[in-house]
Image (tube, rainbow, N blue to C red; front, side, top):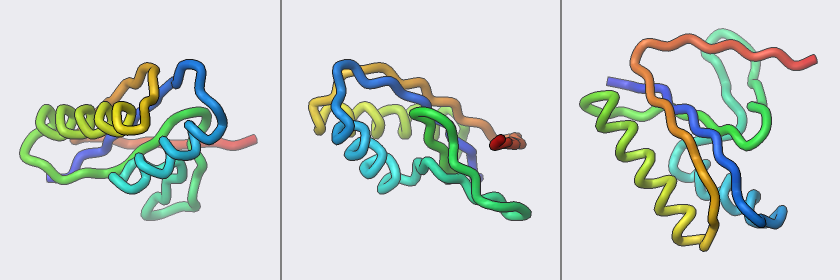
Length: 98
């Protein structure tokens, strides 16, 4: 089954490059700043938010796996901060840019 994963993070005492590397590593694992819907245009998420879809057996498994991967990225890069991961099986989302 495919699940939508949304992650928002905040890095402590981070430089611009720290965020760039974090975004690059997160994108490599499937969490991206720009979301492309099937029926609409691409949308850039605000702030330090990333989103992606992941296959898994259950929402709990996907949430745990993604959370551990994000934690691993922070640790490997020596980044300190917080992150929040939401995984959902039944979802809809919308965005607006003004």
